[in-house]
Length: 277
Image 1 (cartoon, rainbow, N blue to C red):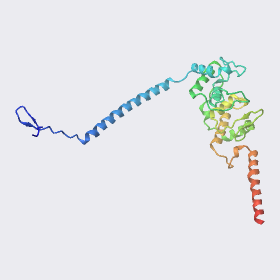
Image 2 (image 1 turned 60 degrees about the vertical axis):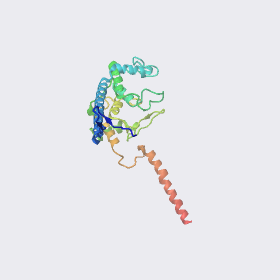
Image 3 (image 1 turned 90 degrees about the vertical axis):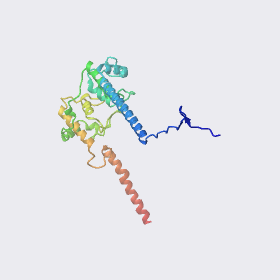
Image 4 (image 1 turned 30 degrees about the horizontal axis):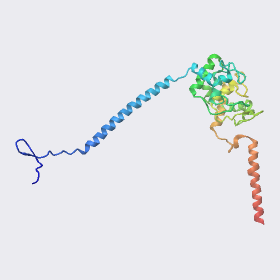
């Protein structure tokens, strides 16, 4: 006998199973949309909070002269002394000023890796804020040359006057085109093709390495501005005479003519002889 699987109520009547309702196809899309909205809102809020925290930490990370003192004692005092008085391995820094500090540190010349004829340019070890802090510390205990007005570095002076002044005062070491050149005893004048306007001014005022100091009695501030304008013009414009060959003058030009000019004549002569034979 087949088993009656239908349910009966208490009054004896048969009760059919409740029909299960089907879920709407839009329900899943709605749930996904709500989830995305919640996730996006949480992410946006977290990003805003992180940005605020980063901004506050950036504002609060400005370094002071006291921080510069700690950096100096950790990285420079070995050669220059704890009180910048100098040692047998490094000169005193009294009177060099923050401008000299910026030049030496922003070009990577200091800290010095090893003793040599002069400090080579290399990758910078400190951040801009750290360089400023060290400069503030040196300036606070032994004032010296400081940063010029922005007008001096704007490159809006007279390039013609600056070129004449550069050829008179600087070209014997740095080359007329600012390509640099060799000096005595393994020293050299660096190329100026990538030097910043501030470091051009700093070099003239502080006289690093073998460079003489050009104070206002030698070159006025306006004349320094003109020289900077001329050098920036050289940086921004290609050689008017064509391929510069390193801007090394008759040496590179003569070598080019010797190798390619005479070499081409010899090749043509050999070719003509071979054809005639």
